[in-house]
Length: 141
Image 1 (tube, one colour):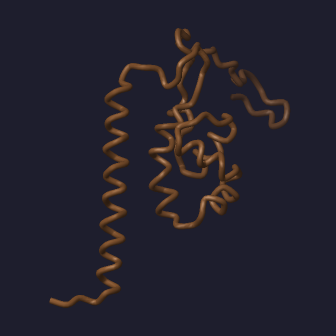
Image 2 (image 1 turned 180 degrees about the vertical axis):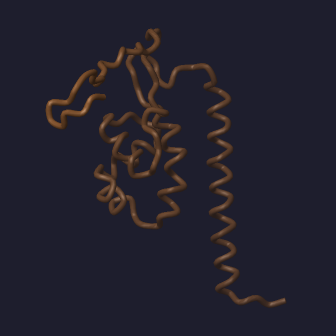
């Protein structure tokens, strides 16, 4: 059966893209299994898990179809910043927030506390409770 050559080329490109994606997924699973229980980076400083952020972000960037420069301009970061996130390298916290806001992700979910850090404190809220009569409306609450 003779197929249209353009269809064969398209199928070959699709096959190649799927094989590449499968290799990326296999590598991510291998790294996750190997690094289980280890800190995201050596040291005692707080950091963002840019590796996990990159895994979440990659399909969005690829689906968008525009180049990284155009997306970086829209997000408010540089294209090297996007490249660093995809490589799992650290970037500034403000840039993590900008990327997460654009992608609709919670930046706090990628935060990794410093090694040996105490649990976060719960601060009492300073109430805006009002008891009595309003001086503006004269209504009691």
